[in-house]
Amino acid sequence: MNPRLPYLREKTSKLTLSPGVYIMRNKENAIIYIGKAKNLRNRVTSYFRENPDHTPKVAAMVSHVFDYDFIVTDSEYEALVLECSLIKQHKPRYNIMLKDDKGYHYIRISDEEYPRITNEKNKLQPGRYLGPYTSGFVTKEAVNEANRVFMLPTCRRKFPQDIGRGRPCLNYHIKQCMGVCRGKVKREDYLEAVEQAVDFIKSGSAGSVERMEQEMNDAAERLDFEKAAILRDRINAVKKASEKQKIMNSGVDSADVIGAAEIYNGIYISVLMYREDRLFDKAVFEIEKSSEDVLGQFMEQYYHGKADIPHTVILEKLPEEAELITELLTKQSGRKVKLHVPQKGRQLELLRLAKNNSAEYAALQNDRTGKEVIALEELGKSLGLTKPPRYIEAYDISNLSSESMVAGMVVFEDGRPLKKAYKKFTVKEQEFQNDYGSMREVLRRRLMHIVEQEGDEYFKRTPDLILLDGGKGHVNAVAPLMRELGLDIPLFGMVKDSKHRTRAIATGGGEIQINGLRSAFSLVTQIQDEVHRYSVKFMHSKHKKKTYSSELLTVKGIGEKKVAKIMLKYKTRANLLQASPQELAVTAGVSIEAAQELWRVLHN
Image 1 (tube, one colour):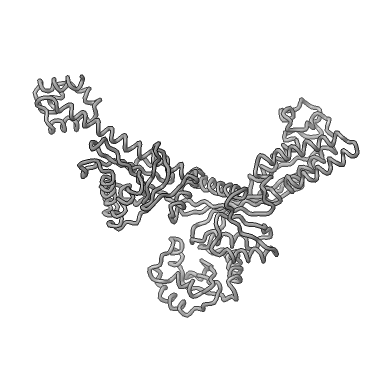
Image 2 (cartoon, rainbow, N blue to C red):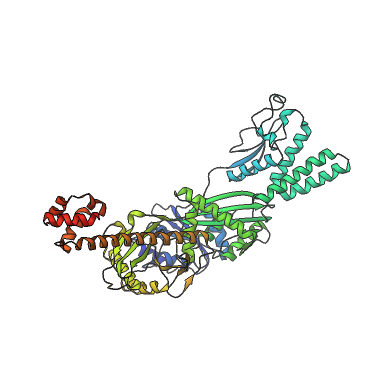
């Protein structure tokens, strides 16, 4: 605990109620955190109150605060602008640090007699450059598409030195190169194709097609049908390329599409920048979750001082301070900027693309797959959890009438089965088949390990989510037990349809449909299938052991205690079949005659 808290509370009690910026400092007087507030006293008080509910990062920051300064402003908007400026100037340790994918990328048009278009990581070589871009993916895609559509050479030959030397390469034969090496392409025609390709990269499909159509019509009027035909083919190639992908044919004129994915304590945010109907650039940022409104904090820092502000920002949900951020973007750009949450159509597709980019980047950084990241996030949001459930336990009851009543517990960690944490339970308290009673008995025995912190590391661990194979009846049977034990663990059921396929998630009072959430639905189906397989397999093995025991009890002189000795020694039927009558006699403590009869029963 911070020994300065009494002093800080006393100082804060006299703080103004006006908007402004507060500046936290450590004992070396270094700035460790900068924040804004529409009411300085209320906001700063929240850090120093007794029994605070801080995130780990905020708690760590508060423990290092020795003193703080503040700057009063006339409005909350002025506080926002000042906060962004001070954060960029001082880069405090506990503020969000925007770490994007490293380096810048450029598109180069080489300074040669026959220029080439390439993507580069620096500007060391002579030539014209487009950029910089933050995304190597965007530059590579744009260069590849432009070279393919305009049939520009990508081989290592030097022109004009290598014209006429050797036969054309494969790209010429599959119509992805105009074949400069054959010597039949005029230099002025080649340079025109290069400029059209550069125009295509700069302005996207719509603008370049419009200009080429005008050139084609002009050529036709001059009766230059050969050139008109070449332009026609290029126009068709551009249109065909645009139909295949979202890079050059986005359907949005000027927009940033922001998608986020959460994993562990980190949040990964992708910004897809669309300008003039094409994907212009992409940036990915890794930030720590320091508050509930991470998106709002990210946008404030990302857009402050940025020259290129789009007309629209497309988001999965509006940040808490949407009006304030809209005002910031509008004043900074000098025109109206809109924050938009799409519900359907093309913009929703682009939002999913941005989210997938974030998920894949998060997966790459944390040794996961993008599908696993999205599945856990979708599942957490659909169930109303505060964060994705990293550690999930699932339970299923299995029996044959009232015989061999058992349960299986499977564990999924970060979207994958954790088989070393699986557990088997034999139902002991239920005399007759009672799925609700069996589930309650099994969960009580399991949860007591959490309460008393007994057992192995997996039994002591508190799961982020418990799933029961069954409907709301199973949830209602176990929920009172959770309250009785004082445990606050999210509890839901997994409902199947008439064909034993996953249908929905059950709550105590109804159902949550997850069919529309493909990744989450796939994960829940996998969990439900796995816990069913595991419990049924245990039930069958249990039933077989009972069958073996029943067979052994038919032999005269063999009782339950002697059967227990035999099963303890040999464990499986396969081992039992390998034993000789003499070995059976010694193990069970019976006569050789009884052991021979036992051997005969087993082998028949």
